[in-house]
Image 1 (cartoon, rainbow, N blue to C red):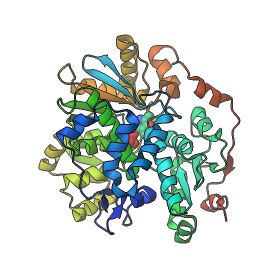
Image 2 (cartoon, rainbow, N blue to C red):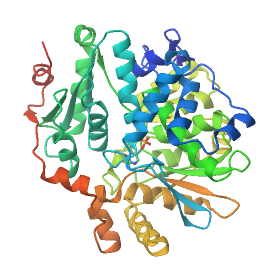
Image 3 (cartoon, rainbow, N blue to C red):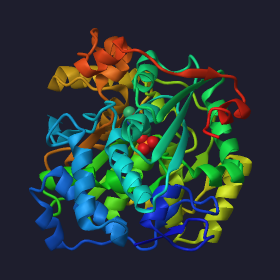
Image 4 (cartoon, rainbow, N blue to C red):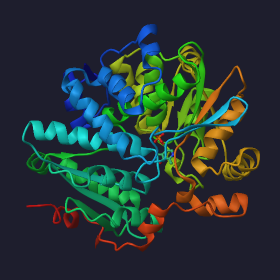
Length: 460
Ligand SMILES: *Cc1c(COP(=O)(O)O)cnc(C)c1O
């Protein structure tokens, strides 16, 4: 299986290179040169498989010859074992034809665990195979940091440096990162904003000597291996509701568009997905795009669903590449225009094409709280604010017995206890594992907002 850049530069690379490098050499995003397509018999054959077994089958279509099947099966088993539930992602009905797919039973209680618990052992396999080591550097405003730390802790070939803005992540989020004690994990609090942290990471990557001597890499949401791992739960959930004989829709709370893009990939593989309903909070650039065919950046605002407080969705470029008929030159021009003017438009025909699969709705904080309250009173389920945005979008789009919609539940409500308490008048139950984090000893260093200060912490 080969991967090409959305911007048309560089040669094709294999899955291993895509997983290890993240970005394409020309600054574009890697996409499969051809989408794998599964036949009716294959979908039927998947029914009843365990999550790990199904994951090996689905991801195998993307990894090709890069990972031997027995190794892939062992990696997906190891990833699945990190989840609290044997089914990994339980599916529950919360209304007529309305379901929740709980993706938050992993080590950090957020859906990013699903992809990152797979990516950790996958990277270790690729590195160990070549006798190599790598240094992962990342910046986090919250959830991604702890999911990456829990995925990479203890791996012999990986050293992780995670930057967070000092005093600007929640206490739970900070403690989830800083209470991990493995020697290969390094938490760095930077006296600046999240953007400052990201700028430092960018500067370190721009140093070619450093990049090569330390084999620097990232594990951010544009990494194709993460997307591949996320297609699995679309298949897993849809099969339980009668795919591929019946059409199933999904409602996805979207930020960087990685989760939604995985649904698109599942559709391209031939899964009978009727609609992908994008939910956004007040940072609704995606919703405005799917409604009007125009992307226009605005300053991000803080909401109850902070993991979606994003204005520029990095994975959207992959969908745009498809909408533009895989015309890399047109895509590169559109992205350059967007970076220069903060504005990007598609033609009416391209918008119609996008809307064959995607619809979108936004929920502000008031609607989010009302959705949390409603789901609790209707179904007795306590949901987090991100999940509530998806549920709200699902209700706006319509669902029913013959029109089932699965809303992706992306975080455990205990991670966002104040928003939940504001909505239903009491805090969500706190899982013991999260409570333990609040008591454990923290380990991190604080440095000045300066790339040289972070550079000094890397091994010589
Ligand atoms: C990251 C995240 C999202 C957004 O997912 P994208 O793949 O970036 O669209 C939604 N909810 C939660 C809880 C998240 O952590």
